[in-house]
Length: 427
Image (spheres, one colour):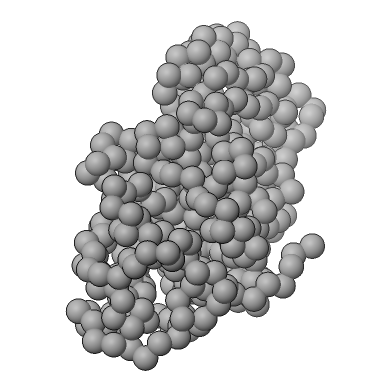
């Protein structure tokens, strides 16, 4: 059961003092700024962290302008306590994590990343553990799974930001119907008859896992909680279950009806992706847009429902030598990820909230893409910490499967995949 918890925020309601910001950004319909008060004090207030700060922030281009306005508002409601010169740069979650790992010192002070990069970022000293006060506050306001995604052991290292890092099926109801989308073979046949395609990034391990997870494959990685390094793995992809998945996967290698990311097409009648593409796909399919759980597939008389990952996006704060800047960055990140601002992002780009109360708002519950994601949840696997290169390994395996691949061919691919796993421990 979900608890009904009131928003807790750390910024008191204050008369707006003069700030070095002009509010020129036009907010989307329904988006409001949060100026409420609450009980969490933002951590250690035994010192004065007021002042002027330069803060670099990396976020997806879709929320760049909104984030700039939210930062301006954070400074404004501080009543002059904080003057922030923010550089907000457009950066995808994957690119942000990669750049932070390459050079933490020149990286952003605040950045958004996918949960599977948490341990690597911790090991690179791009994240620091939260104190008990902040951890308790976040646990009281966010879903338990999102807290787990932001934690290593019993320590939290990042702020839960979205609960939508999974995927499902979009389709054009003028091309295929609600019955045809329930089975992959039927769906592909119906699309081919209409000279349409399924857009599916089959060479990407994040999506390719959908078939392997469905047949019972798993890859669990053990982490050293102190260092964040990977110590070992328990992986059964090279098994009878992996053969089943690989053999069934061959139908997705049909380029006449399936478009991979490298050959993405606007002539799609169905698309497998996540909430982050909702606005674009809506503009393509219009009133014919429908969203639903993933299809089933059959191999050798056995039927499996396509699986997926349940994943989260997190906001990280880089450790700072300056204690005052570290305090302000944590407060700003908490503000950017509080319930009201999660709702603001939902209203603009349909990102699903992790905040308990925000996730139960009527608009979120009624959203077609988030409803489909919720339906797929029954068949999804929780995305665990793993080496980033693991997705590349699985993607390479899946991308090498051709329509004419024999069972022997797939066994060889699985053998090669398994042989490469030990090298990922150093990733």
